[in-house]
Image 1 (tube, rainbow, N blue to C red):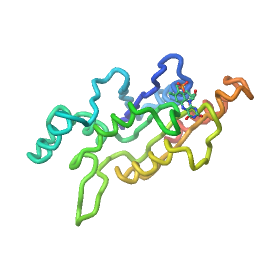
Image 2: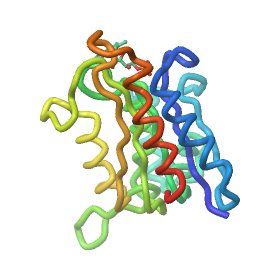
Image 3: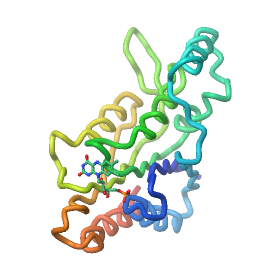
Image 4: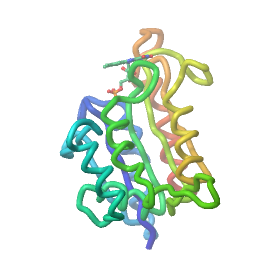
Length: 196
Ligand SMILES: Cc1cc2nc3c(=O)[nH]c(=O)nc-3n(C[C@H](O)[C@H](O)[C@H](O)COP(=O)(O)O)c2cc1C
């Protein structure tokens, strides 16, 4: 049995269109017998910024090689997952800061990445990541779209070889009803669950 870690950063919760993409994917995935889905809802986690005492505690623990400290649980959980699914809306040309704070807690030297022969090496088990997002404007393939680009770089950093992206664009432009726009990515997400 493989584990999928589902990271829910859909800050508007039940109002979120991004969460609808995630639900389409996870509903289909849960029909398969080969995956256990573990969900982490970032809006309900006591996540701290790397600042002040919380930052310096991390430095001390790393110096003392105390990687079993409870504050590193997010990093261990992430490192051990066979697949990662992230759902987050497009905010200010990227994803919400809440997801970045989570990544700061996940990126721990010796857990999710390390060094070998003076080179950075990723230590994550996952072979695939899926990023689900929805955007108010049209940003597909735009160099201003920093969410996908950031995740591409992070996947390299963590040594996750494959990133899938399912996105809905133009939801707030008023050119087409959001329901019509969402139809295609919802289908795409559900189809992807068959071969994920
Ligand atoms: C704080 C905030 C920042 C946003 N920034 C952008 C942006 O930079 N570009 C854009 O096209 N849409 C932006 N939007 C619109 C959202 O991307 C869009 O409404 C999206 O579908 C919201 O996803 P959700 O329904 O899952 O919350 C922003 C919305 C909010 C609330």
